Length: 156
Image 1 (cartoon, helix red, strand yellow):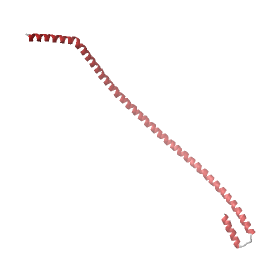
Image 2 (spheres, one colour; image 1 turned 30 degrees about the horizontal axis):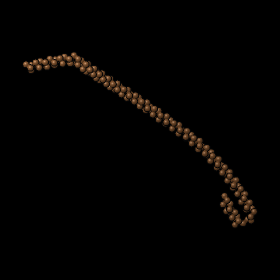
Image 3 (cartoon, helix red, strand yellow; image 1 turned 60 degrees about the vertical axis):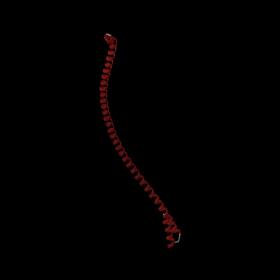
Image 4 (tube, helix red, strand yellow; image 1 turned 90 degrees about the horizontal axis):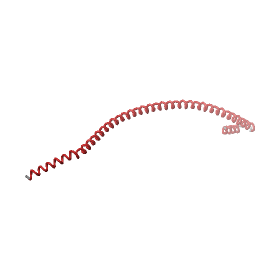
């Protein structure tokens, strides 16, 4: 009988423990588990929203990059066109300047040639006068004549 009474007391204590647990312990645990499940669900929903927002942001960034690349390509093309125009203008200006400088140089050369001719004419005239004067002062002798002419040649 001891065994039956012990068993009955143990069953009675177990039922009291189960009742206490169900009434006082289980509701806070269940509440905590429900709260935790809700937080996890909210976190998963936020993660899904974040993932979709991230995908939208990636699409927007890709579109902006594409637009930026297009604009950069257009700017580069415009810059290249402008550079080509500037080069052509510079070539035209350089050709005009070269023609002007060449014409000026030709005119300067022609002027210098004329001056040199005048100077040479004057020098030849002076030498001719000197030569004639030397010839006239000296006796007319073939040797002296030749000597004077060679001296004149050296002076020229």
